[in-house]
Length: 191
Image 1 (tube, rainbow, N blue to C red):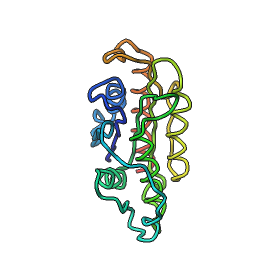
Image 2: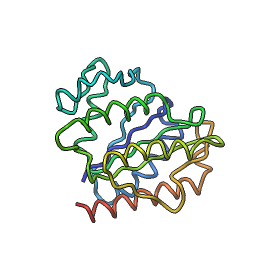
Image 3: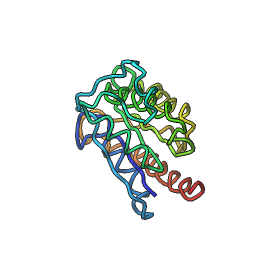
């Protein structure tokens, strides 16, 4: 089975990446294919609501001047999708918002939504606050796309600021590993 994890942080190798790695660890250990895709830091446009994707129904955004369509394709091919974002003023990064909006419009415009009954898990990373709202905003994307959303032993959030702070967040890393275990369990049940 295939899992794709989108890193919405512009800090490659930063805390959000570390929490993703913790979630992917048990997935890889069970022999599943897992890919981490760096979306943070890319210049991507937001959805313009032009509705071209609804007219074509091919699950692609008409704007082809950024990597968005390759990210949408990765979602289509995956059995489980993880979207992770650091908290920016109590919400997700602009790159994550663009992914959610453009992928959501394009995929929901297809005759059969390819995300239906796939697994979707959000991860939010904050210095202090805003992670609950960010996590719920990401989860709303999964809910409206008819996906199965696993939890963990706590909210799927990490507490970190400076690069490397995630290593001191034992509970957060444990939560992410359990999230990965729950994704594996669901892959076996749904597969």
